[in-house]
Length: 394
Image 1 (cartoon, rainbow, N blue to C red):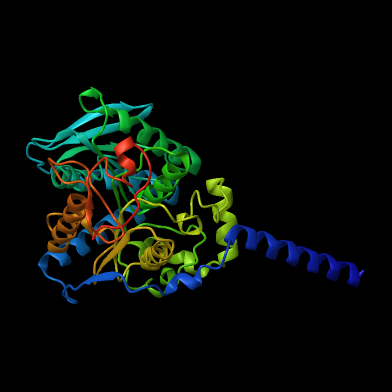
Image 2: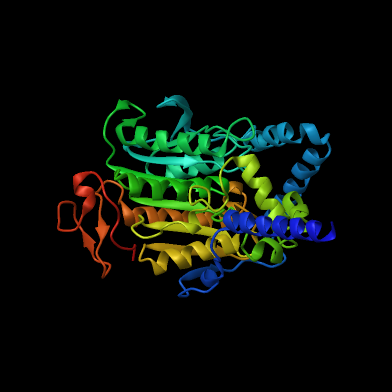
């Protein structure tokens, strides 16, 4: 009887190991080191009055969420996120509801916006919260710095829907924005994709799918503090637990749970294997991507998600850049214009977007030596209205 029990235990342990390995995927530690293309921005360790005000606001928001019964916390978090822009004056920027190919969305239009220059924005919120309303401080700035129209989508959220449902919504919206603007059906002259946190994950998943589907590639993509690895393998998830004032208090308890158990839980809740490139862009093929800018805080839990992705994408030959700021909160750009570092981050995004597709000019790509190529010249895949970027932004 003892031998039978031992045999069953060994079999159970082996099955657990194999399934956990299947869920966890390949070892990504080789991408902890890269070619040094990280551009670092310093900020005051103590923080100025603006940064202290942001930290206090985050503390109040988290306290409000934790102050309600557990069964109501998700609903409270959704309300709290949507309240982030309550009472804010966006000047002459307009927010216009639209059905984007079956996906609820809103056009964000700054004065003088070129309707043919379009940005698809995918909000964050841990795949369970957030909306176009909660991220208007970001989308309004994208409308301003891109000189075009921003489509902020209200993709389906968990747990009411599966992770795949949200991914499908992003794909449908991308197909739609290629052929539709705020004035109706019309082709785009420039297309950008951007997202933050969970939306950054969806952005990176989307640009890989666009490449594989043979659709017109975005002229550039931007990911703010993205989650790139749903297998939870990045060292900073634990190393930066105490230095991340936003994600640490919310997800810190997960650090006490064995990773294998977390992977099983993620598999069951999202209905997608965590190591599937669909939800872990880091694990997928990263060659042939459009020009990509990633921004993250050096102190946040997801910084190694960003670094690993950039290191792997760069090794695959994709034109990717990483910019990091010290002592910033997760997705600090949402606190624009209160934080000087948020204004600085958007200025960097503006320069990146302008290099990829100048406002008022023809869309340009870059050759391997960094020189500009006009549409129709040899190697410019966008002249045909589709294809992937061939090189980086100088």
